[in-house]
Structures are given as structure tokens and as C-alpha cells.
View 1: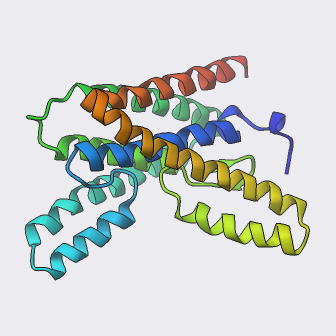
View 2: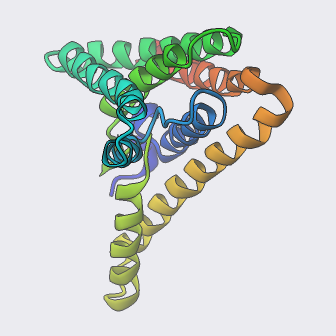
Length: 224
């Protein structure tokens, strides 16, 4: 692995850890406050949809289909926009995406309970998908930013390699995936905890987080 200084800021582990925190927060937020679905983890939504269909509750099953559809659209949009960009344009796209996420999160915090849950669900699922598609590698390692299944697998794989084979690189990877998992859990926990205090406004924490990441990304792009 290269030293941290050789990576762009959007590829550094601390940057991905904060994105992972946001991913966990989105899931905790939508499940706790916006209709009991997951904006970030579509596997869970698929399970809930099939459980509802299996129990004959077609309306509830189709309800979980909404964020799934928004997620697919978000992936397609991010891939379409960034697919043919050069590195400079990709950096600008990443920068603007972080600002867009901050804006959407802030706007969702302003939405009262009278707004149908599908509105924030669709918006958050869409930006989760774009974030997942746009930010793919942390310090040369493939990492997700909105769900943790792959991180759980890699945690176990690299733990075995580190202990059994005395593999130092595996130990580094183990620590990296552990950081991702802890960040995700912290985000989900904070979403639920803060929802009891600030209700819908708690998502502004993530809005501030993305502004922080936007600042660092924009500063690097200007210097570069």
C-alpha cells in the first residue's frame, strides 16, 4: 500500500470513515423517523419486501420497493455522469456531489411530518446510491460507504491472514475495515440517539459533515 500522502483526500481512510458514518446515519434516520425503511441498505429493504409479499401484504411490500428504485436510479445517474470523465472532471463531480448531499440533508431536516415519508426516502436513497458509486476506494482498497456487509467479510478474511500467515498488509486491511464498521455503527447509533432530542433536525449533523468534506475536497482541487 502507498503512504497516505500519495492519495487524494477523497481516497483517504479518514474521509471514507466519515462517509461511512453518514451511511449508517442515513439508515438509522429513515428507519427511525421516515417510514421504517433503509435509505442506505437495499438488501434489508428487499428482505422486508419479500416478507411482506410472502404474507400477502402487497401494499407494504411495494412500499419498500420505492427506496430500492430510487437507489437504482441514483447508481445509474452517478455512473452515467462520471463514466466518461477525466480525472479533473471526476474530482469536480465528487466535490459537487458532497455539496449536493449537504443541501439535500439540510432540506430533509426541514420537512415536517406532514410530508409523505416517500419524499425523504427517495431523496436519501438517491444520494446514498450516488455516494456509493462515486467513492469506491480508500487508499487503494475497494470499500463501500453506505453499507457494511463487504466490510464484515473482509474483516474476517484479513483477520485470519494476519494471525495465521503473519501478514502485515492483512493486519493493515483488518484495521481499515474495522474502522469502517465502527464508523457505520456510530452513525446509526447517533441517528437514533439524536432523533429523540432533535427529531427530524438531527440530520443536519450529516449536512454539516458533508460541508466539512466538501471544504477539504474543494481546497485540494484548487491547490491541484
